[in-house]
Image (cartoon, rainbow, N blue to C red; front, side, top):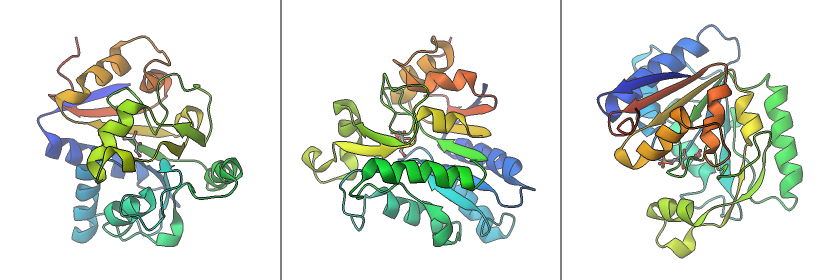
Length: 242
Ligand code: F6R
């Protein structure tokens, strides 16, 4: 695990973008794994700036989102399908047909989840997985006590995660209760994992991930076993490291 501590969110975005581009460069059909939420926005904005400047081209890339809410109308502005389109596909000028998001609306949710894992495998696996971290240590929506070997499947969101995400909805009641998420096993198969986090509200989760025991209590701690995990955080998120 490599830990890089930056001054602020902008520097986190810039440094993480440098790393992502360096890892993807030279790969014939690069595959990126995409997190949603606030944490990676500065990174996506920086990648977009480089696309506009002509120093980064990702039009030939493939993308797989980490997760999606179950039962949310795909046209809802906060469905992850829409969030990924708005924050990644359009700004990075990616081909929308080459970016997939788990299907949270399928009649057979597990069948669609299995098919999603198969599509990742068929693409050759994820080259660079972008990750955020929940205040309870989740990655993707693998909440505490998720199995370390899990693959894409339906999970129940914890009250804490629903509260954390209520800011994207009109009320807590509107926040979906279930999601489809790539598993910890799926995430661990990525060749490189780049996790970004900012702010003191993430400090406990970051300390547990980096310095705590590898435990399902903090699902992100499994990244201690990832062959190439880079953690890019600001001083607030680093404030509880020893
Ligand atoms: C969402 C995801 C989650 C978020 C986490 C942090 O696709 O993977 O693990 O990264 O909930 O969310 P933010 O960045 O909004 O604090």
